[in-house]
Structures are given as structure tokens and as C-alpha cells.
Amino acid sequence: MALMATLLVVVFFPANGLSQGSYPERPISIVVGFGAGGVQDLCTRALSKAAEKELGQPIIVENKPGGSGVIAIAMVAKAKPDGYTLGHAGTSQYIQVPVIRQTPYDPFTDIVDIIKYADLPFGVAVKTDASWNTFEQLLAYAKASPGKVTYSTAGVGLAHHICMERIGLEEGIKWVHVPFKSGPEAVTATLGGHTQVVAQMIPDMVPHLNAGKLKLLLLLSETRWADFPNVPTILEKGYKFHAFSSFGIYGPKGLPESIREKLETVIKKATKDSSFLATMKQLWIEVNVLSGKEYAARWKPQYHEMEKVLRTLGLVEK
Image (cartoon, rainbow, N blue to C red; front, top):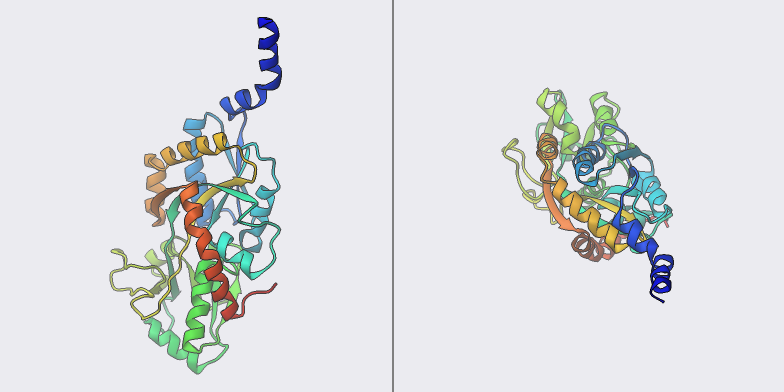
């Protein structure tokens, strides 16, 4: 009888106990929705290296750029929920892009947040030899020359794109948005004269700001930075909004809670790794950790508010 009872336990209860207890048993993939060399890519690789030490398995970063991150999230959402295919995304892929157009994933039902680990800074810059030295001068030119000012970003529906369109709406400006697949591409477009302005994450601009090739006219963030003490914020200019976006790791729906919790714990510890922190400092990104559940509770209420904003801007395609 005792032997039969033992066999029953082994037969009916091995899957959860063994697979989750020994997770991970092989390499893990983290899919990034933007190109290699961009901020999301660099952050993911730094975080993955730190997390590998705790997990005891390699973490492979896969770049699947396109659709403002949609291709990557769709790939993760369809993956087997076993903890071996995860994703890295910004808040824009949750509360902006799915509102603007039909996406092959529902951010409310198809993904599971594991952890949020960083908040992102954004800015508006032009080439150093541009005639505009202040944001007011750029606005004045844009008002006097409807449709002539072009600005680049890393994609449609991202936080900085929405900020620029809201500014345009309030100021009565018609400027032209030129989206690219990554931040470096957007910056390169302005450096090459293909666009006149770039609205992008500051980390993508840092090398060119330091080299004197770009000048920063406005911060789209809430507060000023010590590195650019004379550059005003969007709130200081009287606007009632700013570019809000965070970076986080997520998995597909059905991800076992035990695996999600383990990943959350490991990644949280990885955010304290000295090499990871050095990379984040170099990229000018603030490390600010929230659990997956806390992060979900923060971004989900903003979805419907953003939907109203995007409809007002006429950006909703579906």
C-alpha cells in the first residue's frame, strides 16, 4: 500500500514539482523589440549578464525590431509559457501602441509582468549648427513654416512621439513625424540632415551630445538633469504632460507563478550588480524597481486615459 501511494505521487505530481523546482534547465531567451545597439538592447544585455550569475544558465538576447516593438511582443505572447521565452519592453508597447492600431496581442490578457526595473529620460535635440538655440525658436519656426519641420523617433506611438504630437496640437503646429526602427537610426537621421529634429531617449543622444554634434533644446522628463542644468523641462514650459515610460521584463500568459516569482527575485538581485549599475549610469537611465504586480497596477489604469489622448490627436487607426 505504501509503495502504491508513493508511485501515485510520482506519477501524478512530478511535472510541477520537478520542472519548476529545477528551473531553468537550459538557456533562456529574452526578445527585444528594437535593433542591436539601441538602449533597450544594451539594457537587456547588461541585465541578462547579471541575472545569468544567479540562474546558472545563459540568457540569449534576440532582437526582433519592427512595428514599434509589436513584432517582439507578439512572438513572446505566442510562446510556450515555460519561462524559456521572455520579453523586454517599454510602457509604450502596453498603453500606446495597442491603442493606436490593432496588435496581435492584448497587453491585459496575453502577457505577464515579471518586473519593472528602470525609468527612461527623453529629450528634443537638433544638430549643433542648426539655427535654433532654444525650444521657443524651434516652435516659432514650425508655426511660421507648416509641414516643413520633420522630427525622428524610434517608432509610432512611443512616449516621445506622443509628447511631440501633443505639443503640436497645443501650439497649432503641423510638423512631420518620421519613425524609425531604433533610437540610433532616429538620431543618425538628424545628424545626417534627413530630419531636422530628433525626439528620443537621451541615452541614444549622449555620445553625440558629448561630441558636440547635437544640442539639447528640451527635456521631455519631469525634472532637470545635473548634466544639462540649463536645459528646461517640458513641465517648465507650461505643458501638463511629459514622456512617461519604463523598462520591464515580461512573459507569456500562463507563466507559472512559481517561475514568475523566481525570475522576479533573480532579476531584482541583478539590478544591484555593479556592472549592470555601471552600464545604466553610462546610459543615463535611472534604476527604479517595481514588482511585476506593482508595475501592472501602475500602467493598466493609464491605458484608457492614453486612449482618450490618442483619439484627440487623431492617431487611432483602428
